[in-house]
Length: 615
Ligand code: F6R
Image 1 (spheres, rainbow, N blue to C red):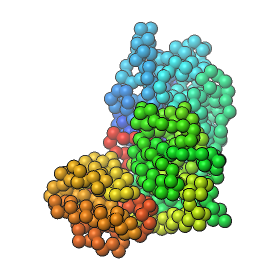
Image 2 (tube, rainbow, N blue to C red):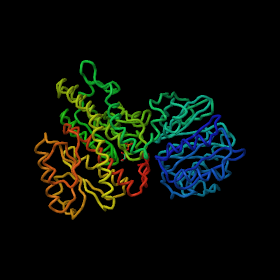
Image 3 (tube, helix red, strand yellow):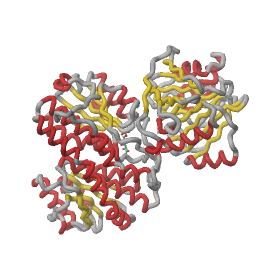
Image 4 (cartoon, protein in one colour):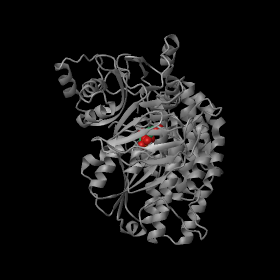
């Protein structure tokens, strides 16, 4: 949520920053802006709307060459997405500029204080208060921007990443973070600050993690990190294991299409190297000992949105394999209901970005109750894995499309690996049983590849249904979270009403929604689980009898559903617990194609942003 880039070096700084913003635009696209030091002042250019508007403004009125610059792409919180509310914000004299990601919760008090002291604020944002606080703090600290930043941060409440430049220090960019992401990119004779490594991956793959409540000052040669009181702190450097090509569309019209196509590889990479030569499952990055795992008597999965549905899917497998009770809870609800959590609870926090504020806050609450926290995350160096006791990374590579696709599949795989590992350690499954399940998982990249072959059929279906007002999704068992995920994708991309139900619940009310021609997508479990399968076949007949247009996803060769299917989409044959990994794929394609048919921006759906760093 909000993308920030800062640069110091010998290249034309504003160009580097604008290019970085292009790579971070998925984080927010309500406005964009840049600032450069220029003699006695900072020059700012900013525009409401997507980055292309800023690029137009810069083409008409270029900013001067400079060795430092910073920029911002915004997902609006305080103040409408207008030019004046766009970042950067400047102080009274236009000598410093600041950009911000997060929410300053005490901004009303600070603003009142600043106005009473004679400062002139022109926007509706919380951020502008920081520019004026920095103005006073710079004066008090003899023009030391890093020290001014530390003083200001100590006064701020809430979540923030801040980056600032000052006219008096044209070769310096200063940043700070609390509860919001910021990483350093270390180059040769140049350094970068960014919300995400994607912004600088074209120049360097060497990054430095910044911890909570830290201030960083970069020049072309140095990176200095301190806490909010000026104490120099040790940082962790890491090498990013993907390159610029992973952050490009690679010939696809949209990142989402590319990311859907990458799913077989994402699943394969997440599974890579998990089996030892003697057939045991090994999760060596887990950092929780087998003894600790034996003490667990309850699992709670916390996550949001698509990650939450990955958790719901995993519950079925985890309970089945481990016999440990597993709850799945929306992160945003978790800490407000006084959950029963103690040292024997394993909390699994699932987050692609590793920065989702709701999940971070839930995780902290769990740790305060002494629970052991295990993160499933796709972003190295992000806050959620850093604050967890253990982490299992999904190796999906960067996901740029705002709608999660490949990370859903890899989150399910990671949860399954954890379930099987627990079963192995606690001996609720024999070693050879675990090996059989892992072997089934190993076959999934090929099955996902096969599921992608539904692409053309789904495209035609989406074109046919592009004027529909509503689509319902139903499923049973692990098909239910798949239905929920299908409906979420359709809402966020096609802006259509879509709702998912457990198929057995239809008769308890929702069946009243069925009317002539209403599309209903049905996820049919494989035939191996006969009770489950036969029940849903009855459900299909019930809705068809009431006029629904049935779109049925069933395993190949399942001829029992054909008579009741207006459209039959054949899925590869896989075990029931693994069916979500193939059944989700056509639903992603369906939402993507419907969005395109309706003229929507698939990668940047309205009102959304990837990485939701506010509560
Ligand atoms: C939907 C989507 C969101 C995210 C949710 C959690 O397509 O992308 O629902 O799944 O915001 O994000 P992470 O996984 O980064 O915590």
